[in-house]
Length: 122
Figure 1 (cartoon, rainbow, N blue to C red):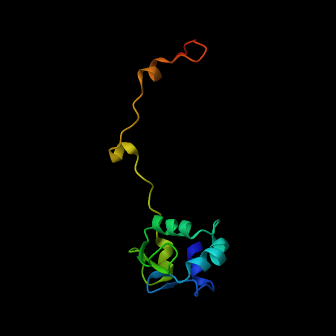
Figure 2: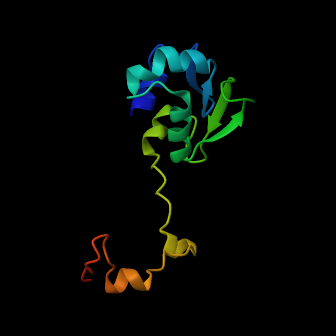
Figure 3: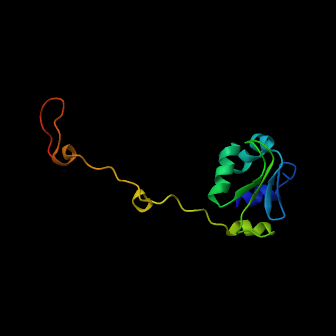
């Protein structure tokens, strides 16, 4: 909702919705003058990260703060199609990714001695 509001307010010289894409004309001005009005941050990198979470990919623009475009295959030319996009789910747990869980040592299972030399029960 905040993204569509930002794109419909008078910010076209900085950012706009055109031909089914988000066009960022001036990333510096977006960070300094616009983002804080719609989000709890004013960092361009955080804005890019949020776009990535919602499935947008960068089409054009070289460098971190260069003018660029973002597209999402789930959107149409209509700005209201942005309201239908769902955020990507988080990373899968290590178990499902094939990562290793930390093995418990035998000390963890039977208790260890503290610095006073008195054993702790498990």
